[in-house]
Figure 1 (cartoon, rainbow, N blue to C red):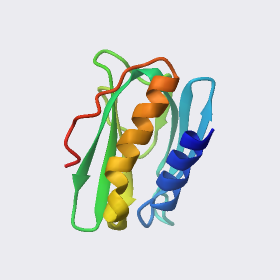
Figure 2: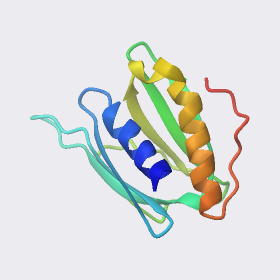
Figure 3: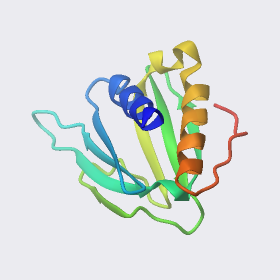
Length: 133
């Protein structure tokens, strides 16, 4: 599916230095593997998000990175998750740490529209009108 491939490619392509994401889509789930390990610290997270339970995504700008956070609907938790790094927030929020260059070519707006389409294709409803930052 083109939308899934685009989302996957952008998250993986724009992962911030020291953060590696691998995204897969299967049976209504967005599966992610995160590796932020260094020689001194092992930081590995993985899990699955039920796509139709995505409520909105937000973007937070930092000096060298952009954090894209996937917010699930209130009361929903991931289908499965494991966090060794502590990066995965609780309360249905999942951050993806991306390079600052993600802002180029209106990628936050385009990502929001792609996720909106993906959620609709999976039988859910997502808010689209949140501000990018």
